[in-house]
Length: 178
Image 1 (cartoon, one colour):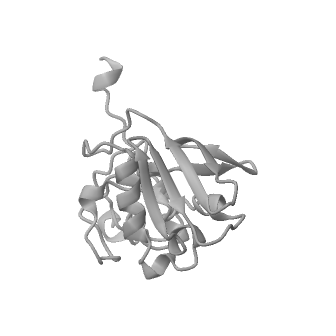
Image 2 (image 1 turned 30 degrees about the vertical axis):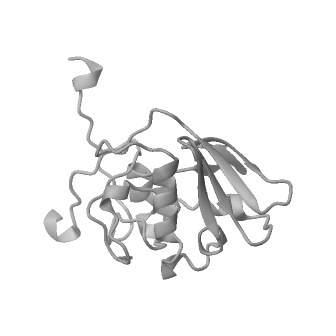
Image 3 (image 1 turned 135 degrees about the vertical axis):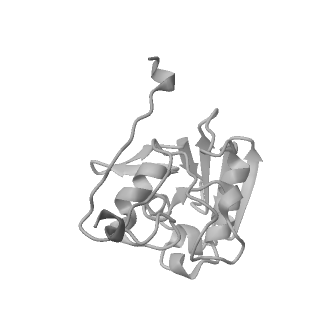
């Protein structure tokens, strides 16, 4: 069979019950699950910040604006295009989420500007050395399809839809394993 028609399944065991695959709150147990279904703009690997959905980034001279240059040709698992507008929608949703209040990159953002289809700039009230590092949190600072977000609902989403290497189909709980 051709590689395009092959279906791969991944079964993962964790030390405690996953309570959700929604990246709306910080839960270490969900980290492995969110990494399978979702991706962030950047990742932290071997002591360095590396590209993921953003190919590159830079701070303004005054340190108050962080611009990301996004990968082109990426879609969410539901077919929604990944672009600057999707990034803006996701992080405008995250900004008032009380679960993100300790993540300066989300909590302190003053505005998010869509520069063009694949460039987005986050504007902040002051420079802060760790804004870029904050985008590395795999549990929460990942991108979800804007189609699954419900305004003001920080407990659940209308599906598990990201750009990650695996598409969500089913989550078995410990009850199902018995």
